[in-house]
Amino acid sequence: MDMTLTEHHKTLVVKIIGELDHHYATRIRETIDIEIKDKDIRLLIFDLSALEFMDSSGIGVIMGRLRLMKQQGGKVCVAGAKDSLNKIICLSGLSGLIGIYHSVEEAMKGGQVA
Amino acid sequence: MKDFINLEFPSKSSYESFARATVGAFAARLDPTIEELSDIKTAVSEAVTNAVVHGYRGKEGMIYITCALEGRELTVEVTDQGSGIRDVEEARQPLFTTKPEEERSGMGFTIMETFMDSLTVDSAPEKGTKVVMKKVLSTMEA
Image (cartoon, rainbow over all chains, first blue to last red; front, side, top):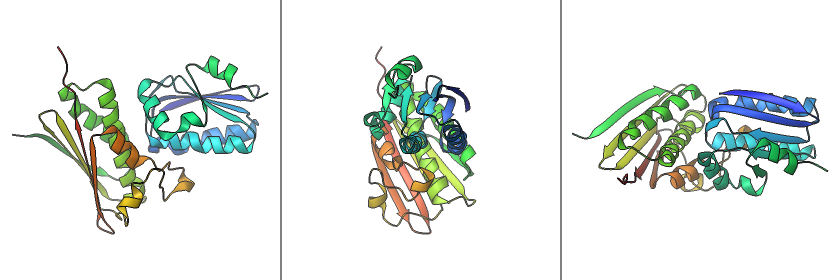
């Protein structure tokens, strides 16, 4: 697992590369939370276009960040998830709670907080 | 003779990826579709994570996996000798979790049930848990 964080105008794009399971969840969670609080993030986009595998630990990471972002009055989106990941995202009910987009560009347009 | 493999490894989270990749490689002998392979790996990941997080709760122990093929049916058994589950029916409910503070989504058993054809959970407090999952893989059309 590898990840890159890009922040621009209170929008944070977190690109997670490889596999996201319980083993990596803590590191991802802690890294994102520091950034969200430090930079007063309003839109958090998970770029999953390079993510090959995710189990329910990944759902836990996204749900937890959603809770945190709601407290700060922000939003969370997922972008670029492959079909195999969409299955678990739908099953979890996440698709009813956050924006799901094909690409980060779409998420940036759709997820803008007025 | 039946096709099968046995794995045993310590209850460390770093073995979660090893476990699902190995079971995936074993299942690959049946030429599963990409979706079937992904379903199997996800279900195995959930079962092994449960053993690490709930079975042994961070303590040292061993996790055992047996995979067998019979025709086009794959059987995966994941066993731990950890703390066991008091109420299996309750634990199998969607979104049930004993560890909300660790952001466990409570979806583990739901995913195993949905992604595989069948799931049985055998558990006794202080003895451990055995999860048996089966999936019949589709026949490739020529």
